[in-house]
Image (cartoon, rainbow, N blue to C red; front, side):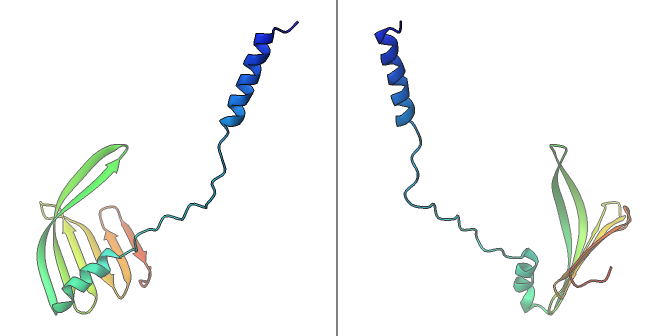
Length: 127
């Protein structure tokens, strides 16, 4: 025989379950607007557009996370620019050894890493 108090507890739990069900949202959630993408190289070329040519020495710091550990490298380099859209960055070790050569021209990007015998290219450069 089922006790009366057990029935009330069971009905109470069922009522909590039904009342606690999530409600369907009445209005759809609007999509999140992303900020417009601005290519950083194009932005730099816009800043340099007043100059005919530019040659500069640079101190380059590369921050990265490898295997969950933060690392950074300090390099020296040269930045070369020629109007309208030729940009070249040469990076070398403080002892003078060349580490990379990056070239941006007519919307194409080329990166050469001679020590690792690797080259990367994107749109506009032959491989």
